[in-house]
Image (cartoon, rainbow, N blue to C red; front, side, top):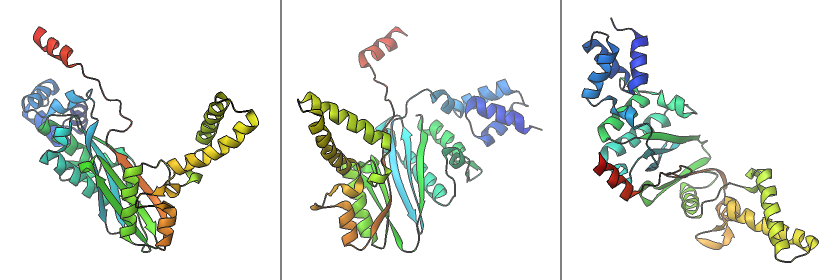
Length: 290
């Protein structure tokens, strides 16, 4: 009889799925070293050996189901794999499982049941099948009321994904706002969302710039306030000039259609991930010297 603690230990060592670990131990009469070799021979544990690689490519995607919606980012090592049907199946599965759940963290999401295992088991299995490190990096779940609408937009084949929620207007307006967000990359919904320390830091930089331009401190202060207002218009969605009509800002566009913006989420694949800089000549020489 194979006990659960032994299965858990083998899973932690190899990164293989729970059922695969159980089968390996059964095949090897409970010998964990032999079970590791068995998994390696079957190509199941190779996912664990990819843990130190950098997965900064991949796909961002959105799924809306009734009053629930989810936006996710799944990473791979290369853009080529992101176009693979197995990878697309993985993305669609994670979307469909998470949108029906009430989880809030990646850890909770990875433990969601799927078939005979969990989403984490599926991710490990797909990593072994596809041959690259895959990572479920992040997600945001939104729910809406009956007077609210979701909007979504996917740009560059999944390089950028946007999910919006608006109230008292249409899904078409929500989609227009999502398209704007994809193009203009606002950092915040409204100025009240901008951290005070960020504005103070910007104010300090702008004042130094003005003084370095030869302005007196009192004049520099007045200039800074004007530039801060411009800064808000650059980083806050509601205050940005609407891409389809530069005569109004985004908040006014939505208001003119009877509504207001409730939430926005914008994912761009790989943002914030430090990508490894490959030296091709060095890589070739390393291969030759082996």
